[in-house]
Image (tube, rainbow, N blue to C red):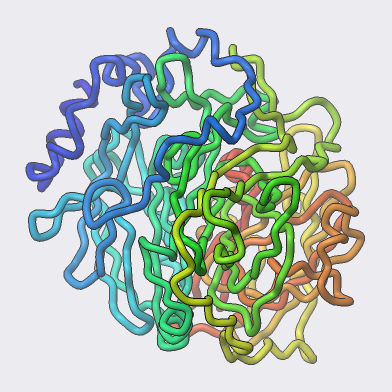
Length: 546
Ligand code: C2O
Ligand code: CU
Ligand code: CU
């Protein structure tokens, strides 16, 4: 049976057959060859020559940045009625001048409007009902990254449903306002499925957040823009290729293009006022070192929020790391930029700190990687034009009010991130489906001490089911230590509430986690590295909160 048939046979798919178009022959063939849905590489093409390295000048940034509208790809929708998300294939032009890329997406149809990977808008307190319909020829499951849900709703690998299977979710949105996301979490193939396109944004709104937007005149889709930053390996035909070598499973899989909202070399035409950029690093492995340049000068920007919503107060900085899974909410005052000039969002060169011995990241699967790990990469050109209509109002002094987690009675739990010559480990363990490595009491606050050995590489560590506060960073490498805004070694991007934190080789990062939860009975969640190659290879454990 061809995948084309598989996809088109999924119940309820009729209306979105237009959007989720019949898969190309090439894609279907590749499915037949590998019998892996979502394996987007075509064996014959994977050996082909990849575009050779280019230094992309600002002039080359001419492709309008894709901004989600009300329908189609990333189409924005308020979640009101029960939502049905059907996993299927679509074709989307990615590289201009090349054939459209075959992607996997979560398709939805509601009130006659078709969307792929819908951007979901919710309010704190509301109940969300969703159904996943698996149109792949392999298991999958949706995980709601960052959401405070119970273990059954969380969508870990144990809950994967087979081809044709369905999974029902019903949960109350308990999070603070913020930009969360959803993506696949099946056992050992989360990276490939996410890479193939499966990922969507999940916004939570609340009164504080709304007041903040109103005050600054921010409008989602206008001057409040989600930016999903992802690297992809694109072949000469414009198709995504995901074929990690052993070295790449170890070091992480890197792309030869970096896309923002699936746009190559994107251009955002802006006017002189506040712009809010809500960035998600949706790459499987690549870390970004974000800087805004105006000419030769790096531009100060305000960090107003992190993974789980607004900070207490804005933090002005000039640089921030963003590792896979993390979000960063920044404000940029473009009224300071003379009309006709532009700002360039770049990832500045940094030391990727591959200290695990051997080479990492750069496989020889026929690919020339345009952007080695840690290379300087231009990401987005923001061209400013028009007159300043009114002087932008200053940022409010208080963005959000919340209490810190009380850690005076907290129990410390060390987690050693290590490498045994074969696998990445958490306290000496690799993932076993049914093994619970840590049991925590729901009455406890714990301090998790993430200690990364120096003979390692950076790991973006992510916890399910809870958000945390970063207490401190110790023994940070210079490129991180330079960003410290307090005596605890924390950077602006460590403040507020988070669900994912980057830990460099040799570094120790302490997190405060309050395990109080309202769910009946004991709950099991994952704790893992969000370098998705690492996650798929078992740098993950189950923990239970009883
Ligand atoms: Cu974003 Cu366990 O994942
Ligand atoms: Cu998650
Ligand atoms: Cu890792």
